[in-house]
Length: 260
Image 1 (cartoon, one colour):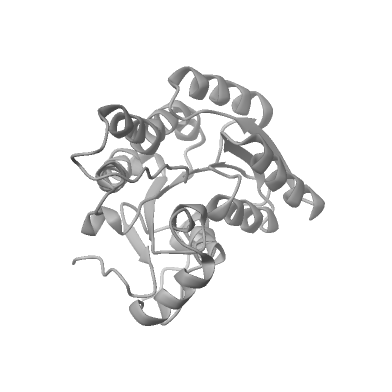
Image 2 (image 1 turned 90 degrees about the horizontal axis):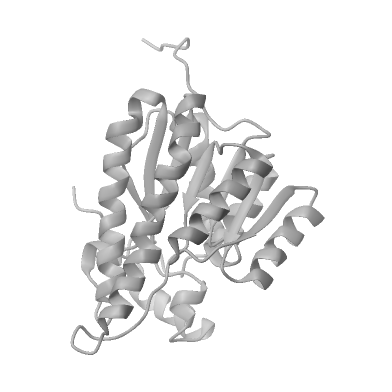
């Protein structure tokens, strides 16, 4: 029996969506995709030039976006950005915790300060952000949180312990938020991207090398692109995903399979 009368809440044109790390890569692709859907966008980034460029691209296409500079390693900076964002757009319908850092060093060579800063940016900041915007989202009795994880959370990462640990923690945070806030009609899911043409993998490679490596190592035979992941994010905020919460969804061409 098909229950056509079941309420399925999802994104509505005019809803406010916040994207951290919105200045490039996945973040910019999210912003542009959400803008096409009619979202009002808060773009958070530490890089003012990149953040303003995303805003320019959105606005030049007829969208509504505002840049907020924020250092996610600084709790006071996050608090200030939360206040400014709420004053400008009000509570978000969706928060995308996308920003992260990936310092490379072996366990023996990694400085404790580097490890701790990675955790601040990659997991403490998302927790802080969710906690800060949570009351407003709960009052609206609707909302979506999307956390960006990584295949490194599942496999570990040589010369990337801080990153792998933080991304594993993001998956755990996703499940906990989903369980606690389901009663408020707030869904929380994580996207687990594979290697894509974004700044992090390009820090140690070239586009040509990544594309060629993908042909050999990825079952679907190609590298990922930010637009691939943005399409999944668009689905997760939609009414079509109204019955999905607490999940980690991998989009990586089959390179890393989520254990069942």
